[in-house]
Image 1 (tube, rainbow, N blue to C red):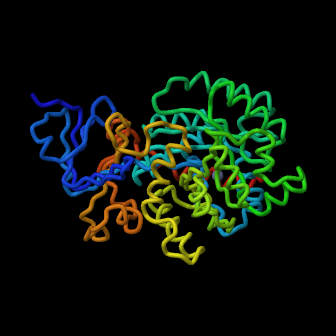
Image 2 (cartoon, protein in one colour; image 1 turned 120 degrees about the vertical axis):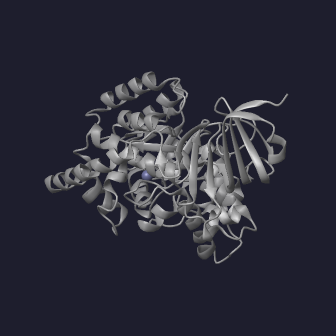
Length: 440
Ligand SMILES: [Zn+2]
């Protein structure tokens, strides 16, 4: 008697990302009830039956990528203001448009972000933005996994006028999303330069009270460091430590401005750093000391940041740039090898999202899996699958995306998103941005 599964995926390779980083060849992945049920040589599954058997013998299966830091809705600002320094870009271009933001814009922008992520092999993300009730709705509808955090500022946001309103909103969101299969919350104070100490302490208390992780932009630029030193007499990491923000379950976006003793402290506190190489390069924020973070045992994840500062939500591009950046900066081609980069984009992401089981394919793990078409010329010949994924793939090889055992994207088509309708909405979106940019 052969077991019956919900889905069988036959593939040329399975890149498992399990503890021994096994790569299977001529293999099969069996899915039941949204989880990986079994995997192994294709021959041992030939007698098995399934509700859906997919023959993908020309593909490589791997865990869906985890985008550890993004602002998915910001696709609506993609390409609106480029080639500017962070503070000028934020205060003179991004914030003035965001001031007029509506739930509808956030929902459309997030849906476009989800469409891009699912088509480029990302199955889970950590998202921080405004009107996140709308963002969460879009994430839930798109079928992606998401940790979503309302950006908390010490000044009014379009989503709330006062601090009291902000926490009332968080409270509502906690109640609304409790127990959702794919949408979870994170407490997300925007940064140390857009909040006050009492507000950060209140965020931390809220996180403790509701057993939620904390996510914050930290140590991103030299300007932030200077501001923190002049306002608080402390560098950003020391200031965050003084306020009790650094603990397991906390993930910080960027971590560019880090001294050796700060790296040691992050390792000691079990804080995860989400590295955003493309955003850091585009805004010339600097280079996060990733080799030193890895050597110190700090969990490192990868993120795209928002489409306004990247300008893509493509984790394959992020992996590629990450691997190259640290080699040229360290003038050492052995730094941050392909496997380490893939680990960041999968298992590191699981740590950033504090979401157990993500980032690897093994029995019992969520069936979040993607398939890459290995027939593409840039994927041939294949000696080392991990190398191919990090150095040769562009993400356009992704031909199947599965989340919790459900096909959400296959061969250019979405099962959860009405993409032609979404495309139609882009014209109105461009008009809205132009009008509101003119308003100031
Ligand atoms: Zn960001």
